[in-house]
Image 1 (tube, rainbow, N blue to C red):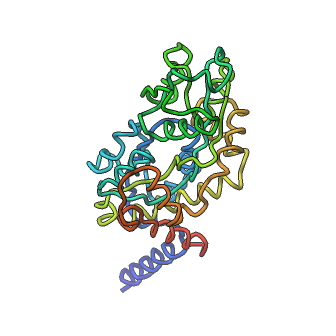
Image 2: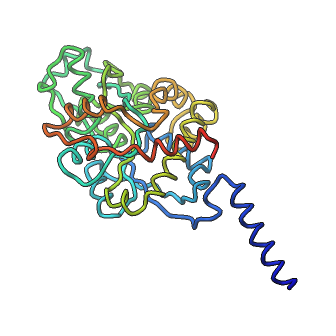
Image 3: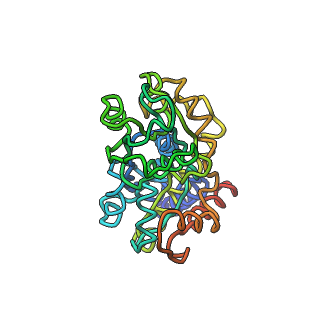
Amino acid sequence: MTGTRHKVWFGLLILLIAAMCPCEALHAQTQKIRISLSSRSNTNTSYYTAQAKGFFRDEGLEVEFIQVNPRLGAMAGLNGDVTFTTSFVSTFRGIVQGLPMKAVFILLKKGIYFLMVRPELKGIQDLKGKKLGVTAINGGDHLIGKELLRSKGLDPNLVQAIAVGEPALRTQAVLSGAVQAVSVSPPHDVLLQQMGLKAIAGPPEVGVPSSGLFASDRLLRENPQTLRRTSRALLRANRFIEENRQETIRIMAQAVPQSPEAAARSYEVELKALAKDGQMTDAEMESLMERLSDKKRPLDEVRDFSYARLALKELEAGK
């Protein structure tokens, strides 16, 4: 009888602990997920922060970041090689053209880029017939590079875009003279200025989103809890970034090679564009679709922010 009573009390104690704990990790086995990043840059600060402050861990998630070429991110997500891809422009364009994926979380609604040129170039018109180094043709930095050229009165068609790759490779290309200009986000603009290059345009007036999460339709159907937990961790990270400037700068300087001064500047000019609710409006999504693709799909086939909304509601309720 005594043994039975002990078992009952033990069971009640476990239920009480589970009810008191806001974190699902106590009653859910830790889940390993992989998130593909296009490059190591400050646009990924929300992910770095969620990892460094334990927000992923609090949600029962063990996260591995993998650097993947932007054009391959979507296929990696569809094949199950990664859980989420963050390559925004190429993935979004692929979805509009029919890929069975959706945008599920938005981090930066507008990427901050600067057009950096070699020191012998005196002005924007000197770029006629020259080469612009980009991550990938028609990728995010290329589209914004063209926007910056156009904003300064130069037809982008007069500048040849060369696919070079991630920021470190673009830096090498412009320093060696293989290309004469690059479109880069912080802190790479500051690093290039320190190497003698100069910014002749930026940041963009319109721009395109530079950071978000995309998931396959299969993941949405079969593992919605992963989406909910990941969204909650990222919303907590965004709140932390907004409220803790110095600690965020420290995390940035550890995640991406840069000085504290460069990280601080990036915090001011780039992270102010964080989407605090993880979403874009229907009007913003429609506009983005028109800019990035000749085709159109119904919005319900392109985005699903229901998990971001649920996570936001839970955080606001203190769950």
